[in-house]
Image 1 (cartoon, rainbow, N blue to C red):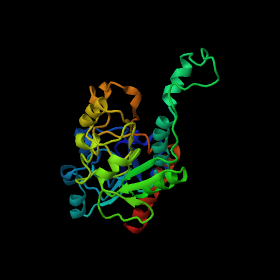
Image 2: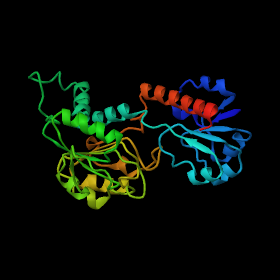
Image 3: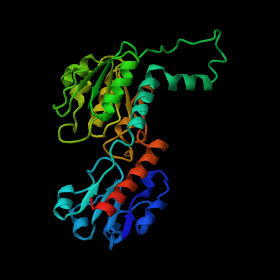
Image 4: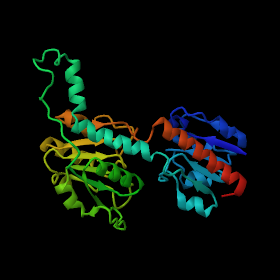
Length: 310
């Protein structure tokens, strides 16, 4: 059996040697589009994260199994794979704790003025102070804040639980319309955006969520509201976000963008008040513990297929 990993660079340098137990294992750090079919020649199993396996690729290879090294499957033509009898296995819920933790890292960075005061101290301002503390920027408690969650799935529920433990009042908007959770108040999107102090997005990208939040919705946000997106890029219209940030006074923490890596001359790079914007490069999922869990689950997925054909 031949197993080919097409983009191991997206796995943080993880040790993939255990996959050699199942046969001839070949790994490439990255694979350009014009090399995909060539590298999958004679392969039985493809291991991919972001590489596109569309109908043309699947038609010109003889794959029996695709191991998606993530949860989302939007890089694979699932319908064509199914027609051809190619099994597709993803990895779900491997990074919940990591994403939840990063969500609160972004929230608390704003509430606790962490970035401002780290910079303030390192510039020597504390050395110049006449008193032991400083009130240039005021900190704010999560307790008592209204926290609106967009997408109350596995991650959204854990964020809700922890936010509640801090004393926040949690409400949610169901992007599918099918989620009815009696534990928290369910709101329509506009009401959530208008009334919440903190809004965090934990939803998938699909036809219902693409451009869910554009200029009209952004103008509804409260003064000093905090908007967090650790779900998927494309849920917030980024050009509209840059415009609304320059016109308003809300704060934004992003870990995902519609195009990744970030495009040069992206409108968010030109936002006037950069202290109200935090962007991290899609790292919320990538704790060392989550990566270890991911590799183990990939191994188990392959082992199950080898032993049981499913």
